[in-house]
Length: 459
Image (tube, rainbow, N blue to C red; front, top):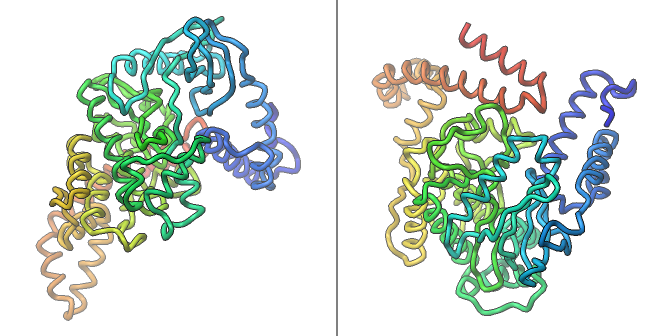
């Protein structure tokens, strides 16, 4: 594949910027399963056509569906992501339909991908819970590895969100969600508990089911690490099933993101994942919280136009209060969502089961454990997150007598502000280094700028 940025028409730095944008668009397209056709993608980004066309052509050539793999006859493609393609298949010996996940792009030449794939098979097969997809077998055909899983007749939350966004929040209720799921599955709607109430109650029940499934996995020592709407399937009977343990790992094993091998979807990753740090079950709580936020508001809590921008917001910005986006949400529910999205893992729910319990309490009109942030707690977070602005605020209030009350507060906090400034400097240094490693492969120039900024902070 040639690099369009090398052509005379591309114009140096502008060509590199366009190439970077094209790579990010292509990456998002793959993460979303390539649901949008290549032609539509090119029409949507005409200024990137010369960069996207070679990428799309290579993708088409690399991932032609095999006719048969071992005991499995390929019937059709169900979806694709960063690690492989999922097909509907028939297991010939047992005459049953399964979902067959095939590792893409030559597993023998990519030990890291193969290691993740093997881990998915071993770990997911050890789990037995109605909210987790069942693993049936694992095999190798001519050097290509595949995983046979229970075929879930369901629609992903990503598909449901897409349909819900077209309709808007106002007309949505449980029945509408049930009809969306049935339509996406090609079946008639059925009566089920989640479809009987309002929209908020419906999505809370679906997320509660996933939280309980995650709690089961966490108790077995397994962290999913890639919880997101496209990995949650909803059956027509209202049952939610978590799929794709391709990023899962056992607690205590080294994280694979330390090398910059970032393979999660950035909109839903936790701050500790974005930094390439250690993760535990609270990482999945954050990702599920981001999913719930989007379901309740039809907006992502941390949006952005690039991976770098999204990660920067996850690390350094608080999400808008969901109640401000969807005024129909009860303040207690906003508190539940925001607790799941705390940047500090110690301030989140300690376990997915606790998250599920608070959702259940809200559904049953009982008090929840989450508390809405007070003005003091917001100020404390702000001082910690923005110590330089806090210092400027201190100078301002000392100069304006009418702000004396705030001045007294900030004077008392001077020691904390100085410590926070040092902590912020260290955290910014860690963030710069972490993001530099994450983007090094896709944008070496940006990684170089980030490393230079880090060196300036700590010469």
